Amino acid sequence: MVDIGYAVGYARVSTGDQDAALQHDALTEAGCARIYTDAASGALADRPQLAAALDHLHPGDTLVVWRLDRLGRSLRHLIETIEALHDRGIGFRSLRESIDTTTPGGRLVFHVFGALAEFERELIRERTLAGLAAARARGRVGGRPLAMTPAKLRQAKAMRAEGRSVSEIAEVIGVGRATIYRHLSKSG
Image (cartoon, rainbow, N blue to C red; front, side):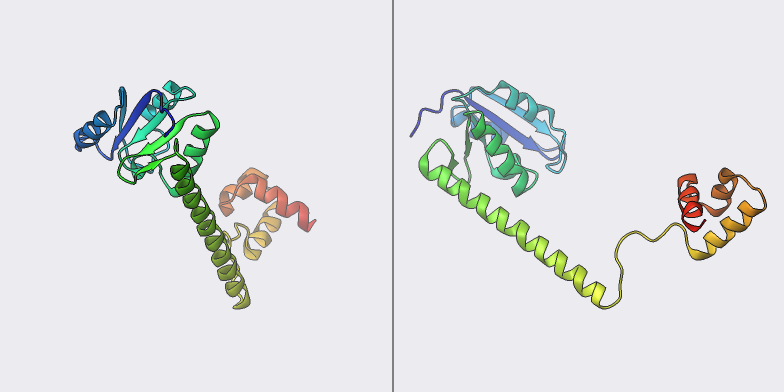
């Protein structure tokens, strides 16, 4: 095993009502000299204590978490975070999953996770494209409904012919001025 240098712990609880004591105890036992804790949903991108922990780390140090889900919002986010740590020469350990990227075996496990995440993304992409193709074959068109219907366009042309302003037309029809300009210029 490679010397992990300075171990920095990161703990996260989903709400302020939850207690991070279990995570703190495990991180302290794992040798973390300093522990940063956020009380925030894992889905939130803004986690100030995680940012502080990442700023505190230097090459040769190791970021330690109690469980993988305490660090990453998703598998993709987790992999990106750990790859960014690796690029900076910083190791990563997850105590519950026994992943330690400071060892060859830990790096192998992490790369397997990365390959599985990439595979999952490709499957989702293929299913999405197949679903869109099937919907198009049934005559369904995806996307946002058009703001300017043929009836609205006729009304806009008539109002413009009466000499009304584009702002007034847009307000009456319920669309933006840019939409009026775009459609009136297309239709002459």
